[in-house]
Amino acid sequence: MVNKSNIALISKDEQLTYGEMLVLADEIASHVEPRSLVFLVTSNTVPAIAGYVGFERRSAVPLMLREETGSGQLRNLVEEYTPRYVWAKASFCDEMSETLGDCKTLYENRGYRLLGTGAKPIEIHPDTALLLTTSGSTGTPKFVRLTARNLEANAESIAEYQRITEKDRAITTLPFSYSFGISIVNSHLLRGASIALTEDGILSRDFWDFLREVGATNFGGVPYTYQMLEKLRFGRMDLPSLRYIAQAGGRLGEHLQEVFGKICADKGIEFFVMYGQTEATARMSWLPPERVLDKLGSIGIAIPGGTFEIRDVNDQPIEEPGVAGELVYRGDNVSLGYATCAAELASPDERHGVLHTGDVAKRDEDGYYYIVGRMKRFLKMFGN
View 1 (tube, helix red, strand yellow):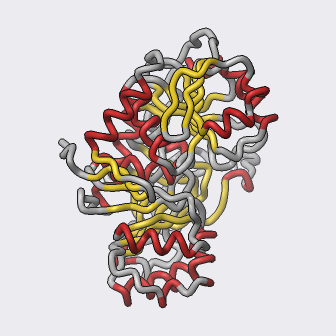
View 2 (cartoon, rainbow, N blue to C red):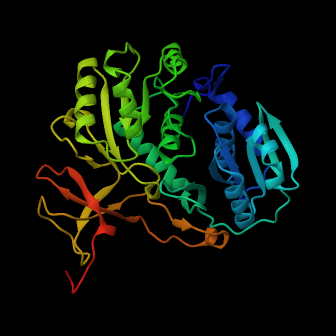
View 3 (cartoon, rainbow, N blue to C red):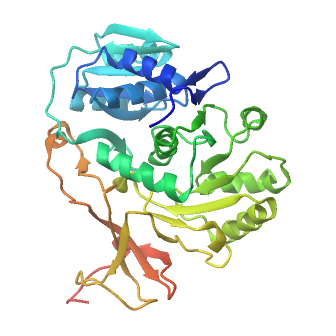
């Protein structure tokens, strides 16, 4: 049980304890009907996180969108999914008022506004708790249908191998609507830790000043983040509060893995290299920090509670080390499937805890996995 007096959210303007965050979250969500669809236009701010928490507690279903969502895409999404509510910055609501149509303001707080669209309820699978776009979605995106069990299982796994405690304090570096970004929020809230919220990027001096001010213990980044950190000479920075940094969202490359492995070893910081897909909520594997330098290029091992298997073109398991095949993952964090239209929100569980990743991988003699390609580049002809 999380101590409600712990600090949950920190911004440049305020700090909220868990008790205060939950009061705000429930106040926001009290204006929505359970099992209703909410377009949550995200930002790394207190009202965005509190809204997300409140909607989950209310059993409403947030569909996460970035602020950069254009009017054309937003119009298509509104027409297709007919949300009953929109929770977004007031400035976004004003800018998109013509696209959103005739909406009623139900609630406002900290620069965010809850709109009621007047749309009729739509059928949603009873286990669906969250809708996230896939990392490769363009145009009108397809959404991954995640359950509360998916979110809890993945947050628990991440918190376990990163040893997150209530003393940890993550600083935001990624969009909250992105599976990696939201997994950081979920895993820290699960453990009663704090989240330092900033919309400044790592290229901004304000970001680093805020990190030092709040004593952040960790942050996450995609490969581009680490390319920029190398140029910023991360190794020369004095960041005494940092306990670990984490990477996911694409292959890092052996050069950067080695560079940051050495930097972190010198600084006494743990460096977590990870692999995942939105279809598995967020994470499927992690490389233990002590193996970062001697397992260059590896995605590591399956997260706690999950398992990997490599299968051939005939869908048979490959047991021998060094032989490539499709990487298949099993775990409680595997999503129900996709939704490409409103009707598919009611679809049953299509995966049953098994995800064929579409990645070609091999396993070494120590049981560590390496991605070597994509299945889309392979054709099965005459059984070969």
